[in-house]
Length: 570
Image 1 (spheres, rainbow, N blue to C red):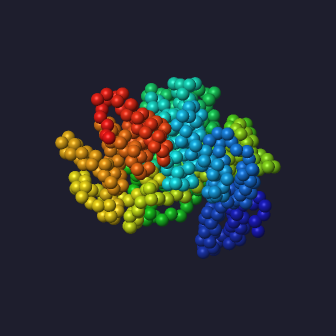
Image 2 (cartoon, rainbow, N blue to C red):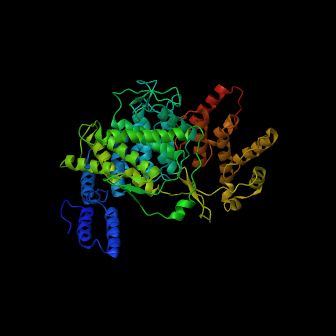
Image 3 (cartoon, rainbow, N blue to C red):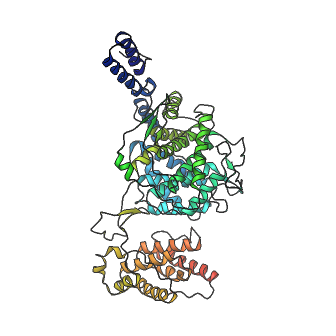
């Protein structure tokens, strides 16, 4: 019988001791003794049996009570607050049509469409959380909003330093707190199929490496080391658990995004007693999974690994500090869950102690109405607590992102979808490129009905590096852009936007008047990227004639300012 406070190990060991005193002299019984001793070491301890999980009844009851509070809570004034509340509700209830979820989606649409908005430093939090939220809802349906928000996020980054921070105060430094949300939304967007500039991500990763304190932690405003091999002392008054979790989680996330760590190790669980128990895994799968090739050579894998180990060591020494004395506790707990989830992915090792400590603290501090209160607005702290209890990041990592595709402007999808994939929230087919000249010739002679059965042709073409051949190809593309068939214009605009060639700006300006909204949008986004004017001139996704005309005139004025002798298409 297992008494209260008595572990299974103690019971088995006691039985073994009694058995051995009576029957020690029998060789075959000694063999049984050895087996029983081995079983005693393999059985879970009493503390293991009490470890919490997100499915534990006490945890479920807390979350349900908290979500009921969030459903009735007043709307947060900021975009980030609305999205955080909606994210907690959606991850718990999986309810796409919940009023709080719909309210946050509408706020994302308005924010991303408002090109006259004056952005400030704190908008990094709102934009980052909004991107994470939309990527978790439906990246295909909200791809336009996500793309616009990613452009806004990039405009708020400090390219000369590499990360995010306040543009006015702390103008010469970046902010670890802000940067963690920029990093997380890059990862979420990439997982959802959006293109991320890995050079930009690498610059941010290097900033994190250069601002790590020799102790292994991070401070609020990072002081950048002038050496790749030497860490400099950060402001000790700004080093705290929340910043250490923010910085270290960001390093782990960047390492995963940039493929700077080897394939995930077989999963192990470290128990409260310190024993490590491996979790069964298919050995053939483990052997067949190759290590990923790094997506950049701008970041040292060795430095990343060293930063992770030093940060892990800091938490071992300082503990998790989940108590009422820790500043911004619930905000910190969400960062801690993020750090531990990506650490588990890299090392394959789970540590339940931090989660147990968090659950026990939240059990004791939940208010009668289901909320938690701390540094931030009550619904914000409650949302952070719910995301912690859910193991939100772990759930995202294990579950992956929605892989939902859709048709472009109502046009057809290929018959064979076996190898299709998501890119920028769209369902796309793998490339089956033919020689550029061959494709151009086919497009010029092929009618619309034949094009609709040749979906693989409808992608950007790679232009020749030979000046003469390239000029001939561009001339053919210009003919296609003026052609009547949507499919031909689509290939031309995709190619012109992918070349990033300023000489093709007149073609993109011309395409702003295209009858198809999708082609208008591609031309608009291509102009924004080439000009580095991420808000462009306010052309909405479905403009009327007056808005279209105003945008064309503004882009022509801009182009004339850099190329006074430019000529435009009629």
